[in-house]
Image 1 (cartoon, helix red, strand yellow):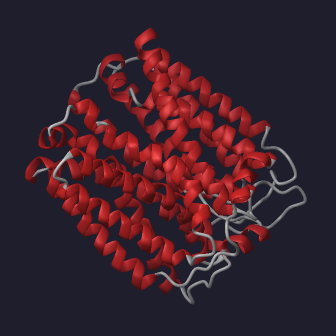
Image 2 (cartoon, rainbow, N blue to C red):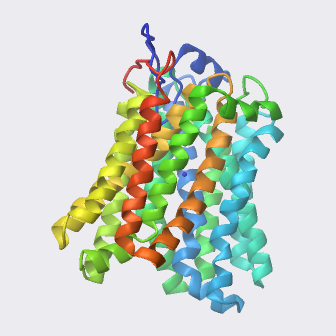
Amino acid sequence: MSATCSTCDDALLAPAGAPAATTATATATTSGPVPASAAAAWPAVAAVSVGTFVMVSTEFMPIGLLTDIARGLQVTDGVAGLMVTMPGVLAAFAAPGLGVAAGRLDRRTVMVGLTALLLVSNLMAALAPNFATMLVARLLLGLCVGGFWTFAPGVATQLVPPEAQARAVSMVLAGVSVSTVFGVPAGSLLGSFAGWRFAFFASAALTAIVLLAQWRLLPALPPSRAIRARDLLAPLTARLSRAGLIAVVLMVMGHFAAYTYLKPLLLQVFGLSATHVTALLLAYGAAGFFGNFLIGTVVARSARLGLVATTGLLAVALLMSTLAGEGLVAGAAVVLAWGVAFGMVPGAATGWMLNALPEAPEAGQAMLVTAFQVAIASGATLGGRVVDGSGITSAMLVGAALVAAAMLAAATLGRGPRARDAVSAP
């Protein structure tokens, strides 16, 4: 699903879309050597960002190829859906598990290893003789997803000076938005022209390029200390991180209770044509790309404001979907606001957690990944029940209510000594 700090008397959580905002955070997340110059730093950040793009594209590629894969491996469409759900389930457990297992291992080695595992997953999927092999390939992907989101934000902050950390994390998270706009549709297009196996081979080829780039560009990145199993309790016991997890679970649940039915909403409630719906879904991804970078500026000044603003905009977008009326203009307004808001989510959540737990940033990220995966599954399930029982509009209202509750949690539970840090803009 992920800046420096000039501490004020009251300090406000800190940077964002990614980064470490207090001196303590910077110390915790930048223990390894930083590249000597921007010429060395930013290509390394770009290599991690492109890795994000490939990973997310691979994660959701079966959505556009599901029926083709099902026919090719002789399973039903329902069984083929396990290719999407199983990686998410494993990622929820893998994130904290890999965080502990990595110990004091150099984070360069960790990132290169995860990318190599992604390459193996893609090749196994492309060559899968049966569905069992495909599932093994997708489970390996689940390990990549959980591990990548645990370590990538911290790696981004290690690669650049403190004043550029927010921008670096935003760049890494931008891979998610780019894959939404271009990666997943491109995979579907390749599959339609050359077959689903070719789509996985193409993903494997790009992964190999990323692997080589990371091998050559990433410097040694030793962690400040190893994550211990008991560290995983810190996000649940520390007041500020616990507030962030509560807000994130409510926000992501609300989003996916509604987002799962975005296409039916546009078709049935707004009365749009299939062509208009396709265009708006692309616009949604593009808006998310903008939101991803917008949140870096906001949270560089206040992480609490970043999360409050993100949940507020998302709640308004979901409520608008029930009040805006019909037609293309109304639909476009909802989709663009919704896209910008959800594009802000990863950066706002990551920034909050990194700064809530400056002494254990990777433990915080691991639990954040778990919270995201649990919330995605439960939100989609809740949305399905509401749609079946009361219709699409009711699902939008339920989603808006959950996101509004998340905003309330961030605004109230997030108050306190560390909830008032001012940070320099990226």
